[in-house]
Image (cartoon, rainbow, N blue to C red):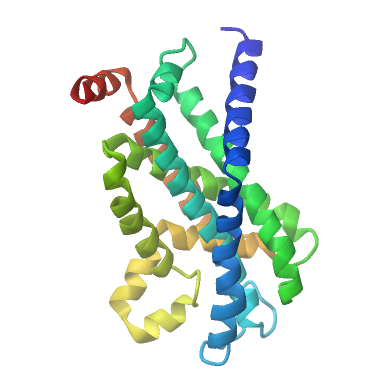
Amino acid sequence: MRLAQYWHCFIGIQIREWLRFWQQRTRFASALVRPLLWLAVFAAGFRAVLGVSIIPPYATYITYETYIAPGLCGMIILFNSMQGALSMVYDRELGSMRVLLMSPLPRPFLLVTKLLAMGVVSIGQVYVFLFIAFFFDVEPPALGYLAVFPALLLTALMLGALGLIIATWVKQLENFAGVMNFVIFPMFFLSSALYPLWKMQDASPVLYWICQINPFTHAVEAIRFALYLQWNSVAFGVLVGVTVVLALIATAGFRPQRTRIVGARAA
């Protein structure tokens, strides 16, 4: 296979994902409405109850809206990744994903390209959210919008790989909604997206320990620190490690033998 053929496939998958997104414009609205409701309504109601002290990466006291904005960026990617996994289940049932995996291109390349396509779409929505959040007094440094891109991309790849793993094992669309809720809500609420971990530690050491081992916590912290031009080596290290492991598992899950078994059972 020549490099031009890899590039042609890469562009084709990217365009297909953007066309799907364009044809499902309600996806864009729903992806923004959810975090904006949290930012405008939830933050206003809990601003006095959940005051945020001076904690890294912030150099001074901050509003609650400023604190939860990175977590809401992670929320956008999390929900979009699960929706992308749902489309994978749909594609597999219709056969389009099976046809793609039968191409002569390496399977890891195809799956990583698919993850990148879903991730780029999600990141585009995150930047639109950050633009709107600016009018809610969420004002990170100007360079933070550029510095946060690697953290957003790693988060999208990690959650996209997790979605692909779920799509590997969920055989019917009817079962996917329950599995999606079982994954999304524990990951989001048992993280530092809505409240600092020291508050969770004061409330329950057990929940604090669960939050610490939740990879979404480290994704949110990587986004938070990068957005304010600081480096969190632990968060990025965990994020990279979990992404690699989940990507390897997802690639193994779509090996030809399993694809044929799934097709035989579906028949």
